[in-house]
Length: 87
Image 1 (tube, rainbow, N blue to C red):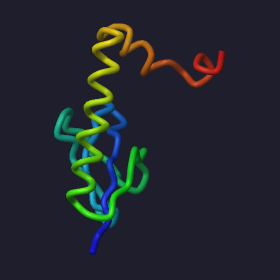
Image 2: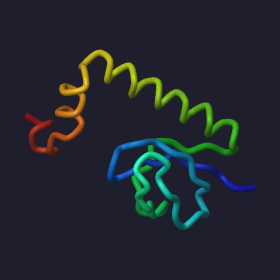
Image 3: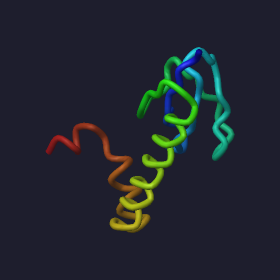
């Protein structure tokens, strides 16, 4: 049985599901090719149902944060360099 990962697209920041043994996935939001092994993982799950629940939760949290900050504030915060976040 395969395990699953919630992967973050490096181009648009969208969340998507991938089997951990998959080599690549196409981002459904921007069309970018994602190398699953190298991609940032937001969560792991043992089965597809658990993965879909985690994905839904992460998307809801992202939407709530975006609503609180407004689009411009969310965009600026999510694209700060690491050195700026440490200050």
